[in-house]
Amino acid sequence: MGKFIFITGGVVSSLGKGIAAASIGKLLEARGLKTTIIKCDPYLNVDPGTMNPFQHGEVYVTDDGAETDLDLGHYERFTKAYITKDSNITTGKIYYSVITKERRGDYLGKTVQIIPHITDEIKKSIIKASKAKDVDVTIVEIGGTVGDIESLPFLEAIRQLRWELGVNYALNIHVTLLPYIRSAGEQKTKPTQHSVGRLREIGLTADILLCRTERRITKEQRDKIALFCNVDKESVVEASDVKHIYEVPIALKKEGLDDLILKKLNIKRDDKDLKDWRNLVLKRLKSPQKDIKIAVVGKYIALPDAYKSIYEALVHGGIANNARVDIVKVDSQDFEKRSLASKLKDVSGILIPGGFGDRGIEGKIKAVKYARENNIPFFGICLGMQVATIEFARNVVGLKGANSTEFDVDTKNPVISLLEEQKEVHDMGASMRLGSYPCKLSEKTLSYKAYKKESIAERHRHRYEFNNIYKESFIEKGMTFSGVNPEKNLVEIIELKKHPWFVACQFHPEFKSKPDKSHPLFKNFIAAALEYKNKKDK
Image: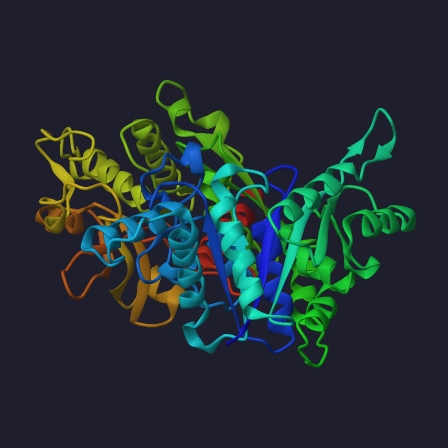
């Protein structure tokens, strides 16, 4: 069996356990180790698929069709870790499995309890995910904060696992906070001491403390934390705030975290520099030669995490083009009764991301029209493709009242309609078209130019699709269907012939973009935006 790193958090939420897990995975990969990363979420939902983005943020989709926590996106962006539906374990999943077994009689009449049945199920789920692809180290992030009632079964499960695995096979990295009290001019260690104390109460000890801080930790503070938290001085690791999340692996490498982890797990690997990653961050990300403004017109703009992968993929596209991307976030509802010119006059590209429901839709349609008529590079994703279709149908093809049956079930021109296999679906959870599906590209199109190949596969999350009844009338007016699913003849990508760069896709390309390997469509979108800006500035 491989070895395990359990990552817990204390004091407050949003300390960056997900980024820490992803960064540790990056450091271990640089040392030649194969990793997988698991997120344990203590909520009772089976998955986040039915949650409002304002409640949970983005829903990240894996190749095998799982709707998961957004932290799994960080895992894939930072590492080569093998991420699947088994990589996100929720309380809902665990209880659903245990109750199903109880109803079948699998427990032979025993009283089903939190310990051992729930904790055993958690352990089995962690072990199952760890055995994928013969990984060397499994990193397990425990969601929530130590002391929360809902996370106790997970913490008890990893306590048992640590005991069962034995010395040198598992360690616990505890992410904690060293707040700086400005009025007192002091950085406080007491919250960290209390957090580690809560860990001890449930039988867990911290092997390494990852201390989030906005100020450098002094020697005296490090000594104090080590003494009162019962860890080695070298195990008190500073995790200072950085400007870009992709700097975190470099900062932790500087602190010697990878050496410390390998020492505690009794693993011997040659030290390797993060040369390529360092070059990417310090040169292309922090000191780009160009800059560009891109408008993201969405309906969940108020919550940054709702479009996390979109924003990151735009940054990646900028890195690939040696450009800094300034993202202008625009609420589509603002466009429904106001002019677009003031918001969009200075941008060089417009992107409309995915979403559900009719709120803000007419504003998105106005944004598409603005991009089309003013020859501004346009990128539509999922719902973004659907509103681009509706706008083209109404204003170019001349189909009055054209709409999606999601927004108007009685529309006379349903250019977007419910997928055939969705018509008998009644349960909301995990019932959409999810995961990776093939797509065949047409030559001499922008999409083919971006991918440089005919066959691709991309991740989906939707119920509605382009209505093929209208295909010919769209083609006559200048639309190109550049990507089609070869199995069901579903439209996957649309383009406009008389536009410098107008591409919209039904899938979610942002899920497969990385900082050191930008997704082809995002890379070409930013390139087109830079070309548009250069022409405009002349």
